[in-house]
Amino acid sequence: YAIVLLEINRAIKKLAYNEISIEGNENSITIIGDSTKYVAPILGEANTLKSMPEIAFENTWTTKQNDFLDGSSKMTLVNNESIKLYIEDNKLMMKSAAQVRKAETEICDAPDCKAEVFISKKLLANSLIQSNDDITLSIGNDLPLTFHTEKQGLKIRTVIAPRVGDNY
Image 1 (cartoon, one colour):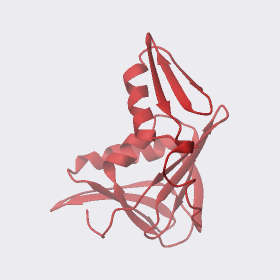
Image 2 (cartoon, one colour):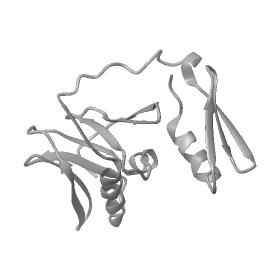
Image 3 (cartoon, helix red, strand yellow):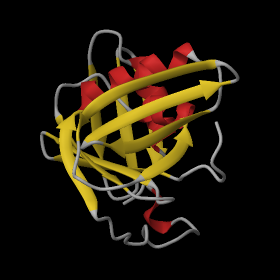
Image 4 (cartoon, helix red, strand yellow):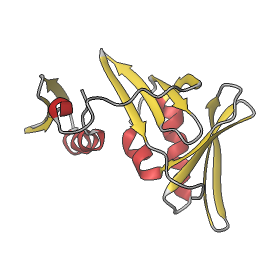
């Protein structure tokens, strides 16, 4: 089932002061934090696509979620809207640039291939959480960035569409 990840992420950040619990059923997900309960629909019956289309990626590997989050936070040094993710010399790189300013960092080892994609800096930052859990990344030229993680039986797949064009 699909849920609106940014909505859930925002709710968790607002409610998770001391303790949080997440419950779900076929129709909704409930987040309870302190004395507040937040309910969001699961989009299984929404008037949208029945499911995400399957996208064939040739470049998939696993790293730590914190490595990806650290790289994303470094990109805030440059005030712009997008990040370029690319593979160079078997390393996943992240770059952000605006006029004469540029930030570039190595995220992790990557497969031996050529791939690059521009994505929204804000969407990426809102999709990641502080965790040393493994995250499986998939990247391709002009394909969405996808990452998968699993924690205590909960499987999360995030898909971030590429930005159109090849500029920051």
